[in-house]
Figure 1 (cartoon, helix red, strand yellow):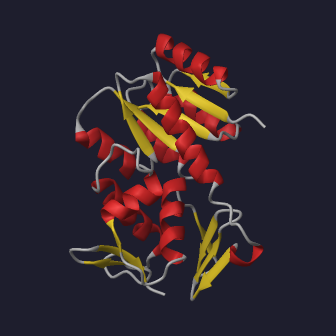
Figure 2: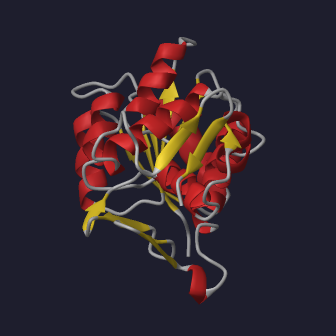
Length: 229
C-alpha cells in the first residue's frame, strides 16, 4: 500500500518539485499552501508523514504542528529557510520529529522521509510476547504504538515513542545522548545531542507527574538517560 504524504509550503514550485519526486518513488502526495488548509487536511485525512514549512500564511508551521499533536502522532518533518538553530529547536519543542534546512537536495529529503518511515514500521515487535510492556503505572503497547500511564492514554510523537520504547525495553541501562541519537534518529541524522534533550524533556512533561523529579526516565549526570525498571 502506497505511503501517503502531506506536503505543506506556500512556494508552489517547491511543492511541485517535492510532489513529483515523491510520486516517482510510488508515494501518494497531497498538498496544502497555507497553515489553515494544512491543519484542516491533517484533521480530515490520515497521513504516513507530513512535510511542513515553518513560514506559512494564515498559521505558521509551529502552530500547525502544535495543533496536530493534540490529536495525532504522525511523523512531522519541518522545513526551515533559516540556518538559525533556534528554529530547529523550536520545531522539536512543538512536537516535530525532524527538520530539514532550505535550500535542500531533494534526494536528502527523500532519504530522510524513508528513514523515518522505516523506523516507524520497525516499531512493530518481532514476537507477540514482547508487544505489551507493563511496569507499575506504565503500560506500553508496542504493536499499536499506544502508551498508557495510570490507565490514561498519552499521545507521544513517533520519535518520543521510539525513544521511550528503547529505554523501557532496556531498563536500568544508561544510554549516552550520542548513542540515543544514533539508535533512534539514525547514523545519517545531521542534528546534535540537544535534539535528545528536547525530546526527553517533552516526554517527561507528558508521562511524569512531576517532570523535575522523574519516576520513569532518569538522568545519569554526565553520562545520559535510563529507564528505572
